[in-house]
Length: 130
Image (tube, rainbow, N blue to C red; front, top):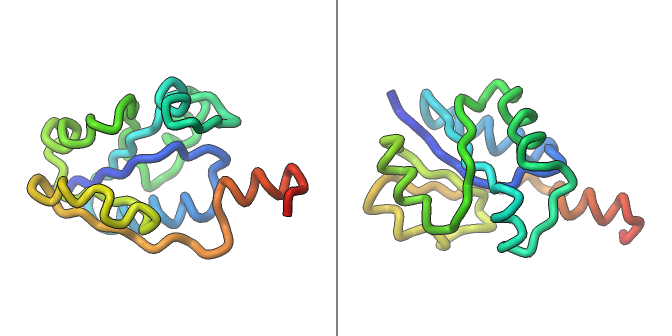
């Protein structure tokens, strides 16, 4: 069995998120999503509309996702890879190069983002900033 992992906040779930999850799942048999906790988002200076618990329920309902785990720190990725015997670590290409140090533990893949959509774009549109 090939295990894939990805991480994110996944607030205001949109087609770009779904595309990332689908492509990540196509790379293996089992997809784990490390979901940023509310406390970790505060450390990252991010504010989510939905709570961690609500985002977790939403992600668990996506057919591509097999398991959701809490992401509490930047540093936990190596431990998660070892704990869950991960074969591939997947992130959007806006993170390209940021996690290359994980290559000694598993394959690291940066997938292209879906053009024209992001949580920031949605939030800006709702505020009328665009």
